[in-house]
Picture 1: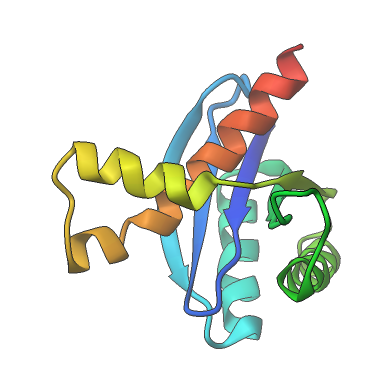
Picture 2: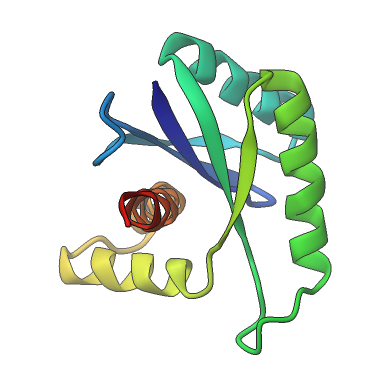
Length: 137
């Protein structure tokens, strides 16, 4: 079984998939998400193709731990995704993952459109890596 990490966004959604042993984040990509139904369909297709048994969706909390309107949107997306994919979906605190993703991309000279097209996939990988580390403990 593999685990999939998802960083849901208005325009793009990052998706990362673990290895079969669920120890490392492997492939990562971005799917357009302006059309939510199509984004969910794209992710469900990947779930089936890559034999994903669990999905972890990033939950954007405020720095004080509270949840705002964006967190509610992510919870709704996660519920729809769980129903469509037929696999368990868990929420994972994603505070600072996008900031960290931008930092990583800067260190590797990703700028402009190249960064914009990659940052959500990197954020999904960070969400997945955090969750995998938690499971190992």
